[in-house]
Image (tube, rainbow over all chains, first blue to last red; front, side, top):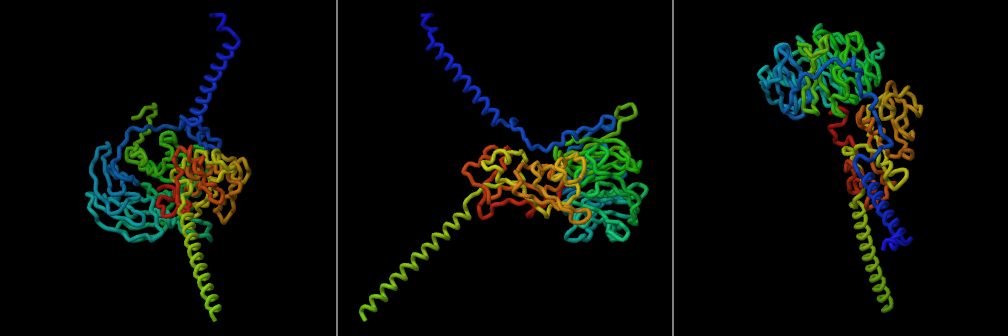
Length: 334
Length: 192
């Protein structure tokens, strides 16, 4: 019997069976690889991976806490003199105290794009083309006239005597008094004076007021930040196009900014979502959060800075307000 | 006289029959045209597209019937366009090594300081979506892919649709064969 099994025909049969089984297994493996989700290698991949990391020595902030938002389409963030945190959304404004405990909410008359708090506690809520003013208790006080059909208000700042609206539609900063009377405009081009105004390729345009009255305004199409006097004169500007951490990348950045009580300028960007702190002269101070801190595609990181030196970031896509604290000299979060 | 009557009747019958046939033919043609307008064709929903590159590699046509199109109304006409320039481009000129498009299918034209126009050279475009990713990531998303029906064979089983990981391929009516971005689109403009 044993000798019969070793005949050439039997050996050939066994080899063929093994070959067929191997062939079927290889075919199955190829098909599984071909149609599995992760198998596809995109030969035309657009990669920004090499720009995702931030030098450790610049990342000197920690996310100390977050506030989980429960309002629809959160779009605007502000803090008041008591460090209360205000977030405006599609239908309402929600308020938390500095520790992140809910402190109230009220409904708004129109979907909000941005929010600012006045010196007497007035709450200015801007929609696409106009502002509604609410009292500290959330009661509606007044509705300002529309900026016009092409307006798109994307940023706002309030000082003791003025409210500044960044209108990405008209590419102007509108200056009102706190009662809603138009005082002036900033940014109208004057070619004869070699001043070309703001270049706004998309709906990213923001303004912040420093404690000394200076206005910091984004000029996203030129990838820079500009400093103005309240009368509208351009005092300084800085910023350069760069994928590197020191500059601003993409077609239109920074998208938002805030000013700390110490006069530092905080910026946020889209494309490579990152939040950075600059000295008033434009030199990079530190990085609050790099691209890996946010989900891919994150946009619209509105900013605020409170009296404790914290930087607050509205990450609407994640439904969070992220609160960052600068590390102490010893490298620990205070 | 009788012969004349017969001829007249025959002519009337002929005319009546001919007109009837013509009317039937017109009806049939109209019905065919209606069916042609209503027939489904493949299209790519730009709001679902994940720019995976399969439109370039899977289409039975080479180059693909999927092409990049440009919604000019949404474009920022930026000098530093990341649909056109690679991130980290060494210089902002038209050199091939600085361009996002692997086939050089985007033409860049100076309009006025500081604006530039970007035009797709369709015969060169292979539908790889590399520029679309750059535009969506850094810009307004004005570049997007569409199936071009002057090329598409409208296969029953579209080879791209079969592997599209985002299920972005849909059947639309031939009377409205394109899905444009920017039409009644409150989200255009980058941030919103």
